[in-house]
Image (cartoon, rainbow, N blue to C red; front, top):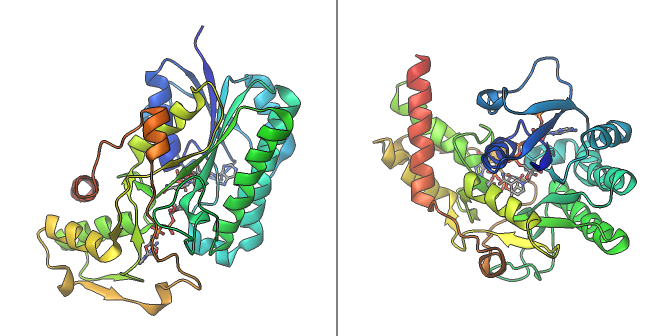
Length: 322
Ligand code: NAP
Ligand code: G4F
């Protein structure tokens, strides 16, 4: 009998890669999408004949209970969230409703329908914020620096709490930044690779960025969804840091992307104070030792390979559209 999985946030970057992985593993995949006036399926268009989409919203408890009750999945991956950090200062209450109480609603729906459903919660390295130690591990204290980070800390602890209170197989994956050609255009990696591709093709001349000194531990999304799946296949539910163990600055990202596009970044990149954040996370770097030892997980794409992959994909996409 094949396993069934529900993926919330299936229309997002991670949802699309996770759906591919689960289909490859023989799962029946049910994606949860919220109602929009027009579908947002560009990342999962190629999967639509192999997955089922069901409507539900993290804001609506009954819709979550209904879909879980009707599908009766073996596993649920809760990836849906308001995921763009700057937007969380503009809409802090809504961010909390989606990312914090939305997770309580998911956990509560599982508790009410079937406590044997295994659940993955998409936690974030943004929880470490103003970091208390370097590199960060599963034991590093949290110090979030944005409403987004605060909401994810709540989500992390409600996941742990449902595990400890109701014996749910509930795990929290503390994932560091992961990127791909399917990354949203507002995130810095894709903004840079798309910007470099546009300049290379003569469609633009400049690119405005914020803090070039910020450092992140960037990996490839395709590798990171494999870690999510592995976490739900263990004998015991636990929380894991997923990271490459290497960090790079936004400036290094820009240098590699522009040079791969055959450009001198200094001639095109401007800094705009309006893009600075009210409170910045300066440097994130994770220690994935537990994931390596217990899950056997290792990343397969390095930073340069990731940036080059994204620039190539953007050049190809923009060239085809011309
Ligand atoms: P993403 O591309 O922004 O996708 C977010 C998904 O959530 C979209 O499918 C979106 O649907 C859905 N969603 C948002 N609000 C919803 C609601 N109220 N009800 C139902 N669905 C809703 O994000 P991602 O990069 O794939 O990240 C996946 C998860 O991992 C998120 O929880 C994110 O916070 C977390 N995370 C990401 C990273 C990273 O570096 N990518 C690192 C750590 C943690 P629409 O298409 O309708 O907008
Ligand atoms: O690409 P970013 O917007 O990602 P950020 O804030 O690190 O958040 C991402 O990773 C988290 C995991 O740590 C996820 F939980 C979250 O959902 C999201 O996927 O910004 C990265 C860095 C920041 O320090 C930012 O200040 O890049 C800096 N940056 C510099 N110029 C910029 C820009 N970021 C954006 N988005 N746009 C700029 O122009």
